[in-house]
Amino acid sequence: MDIFKEEKKRFMMEVNKFLLQLLMLPCY
Image 1 (cartoon, rainbow, N blue to C red):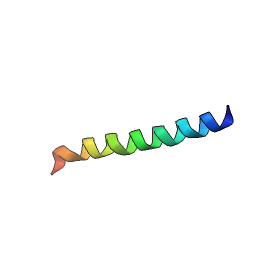
Image 2: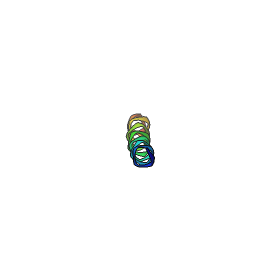
Image 3: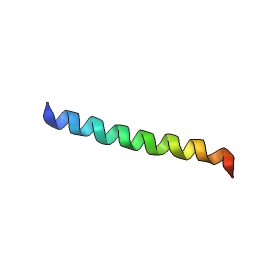
Image 4: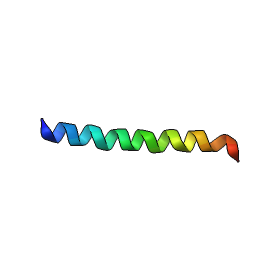
């Protein structure tokens, strides 16, 4: 299950990046 945990962490990082881009979009 350790591999699954790593995958989830990586996935959350990708989601955070995407959300940050969405937040910064209105600034432009």
